[in-house]
Length: 382
Image (cartoon, rainbow, N blue to C red):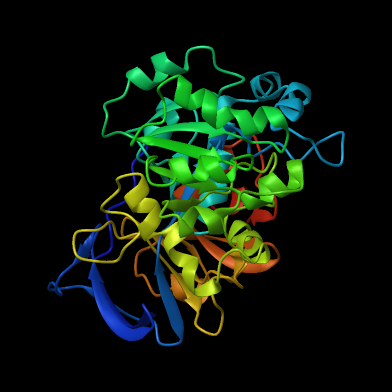
């Protein structure tokens, strides 16, 4: 089993963080003060953000491009019947498919992911590209699961239990919340994903009862032509987080999802960051993610400060650091870490440098990440 290299102790200087120019200190976690021998990294001209949290993905389905037979569906169950998801994934290596899902998230700075599905062993490997939530329960949806109550009872009451709900605009979707409640599954640890078909009465009943709602606007827009009323949900006191879903239905990655969320007009730009950091961390009980405070994981991204997170695309990210280890970034920034072995690459046509061990994983994967090109392996890979 692969392991991440040791973290690089660093004193990050002059980064723009939380709207202010300030320093921070890190090893594998954020430190309260500097330690002897820390690498000084001046990030004047860059804004730094905590590693983002993608609150909904199906990691094994990101190598499959979007596909549908109709312009829009009244219910995602109709699309599921056509997609034959399980059959298509079996045609490829599951571990390779999962790796591509992790890599997609890493490249956009989503360093923590909530996977909606089985916690496969590959997702727990130290060298998997991102951290994946470990403590959760799940069921796919009311239509595709016959034993929802059994699934719910398998988790402790303080552990999030996640289910797709009301992913449609028809009468069946509008009735799903009532069916969930009748089964006794409207509980304080229940997290619903999508919620497009929730009625106003459903929201009044659920916003302060359920653990929260995960909003996936681009996937909803692609399949249904509509998305959840997240504005109403928040006005009623509901917890909200943002999830991209897989490329099978989404615009792309979590940065694309931020853009899609803002396009709906339901949320202001200044309110988007918590949905992919602090609010998401609270929703899924991840106290060490989504913040750059002492004791938190040293997961962070750097972006030229003239760009806002809402404007950024993955190639704009100048540096991505996970667990105190630089993963990928602009060549000039990656060169500031003495002893860090990197490989040249391009991402969406932009020059990058990738940590050599990660580049090796990418080269060995039998599936390809769109837009990412690694240097000829004969020059660096044994």
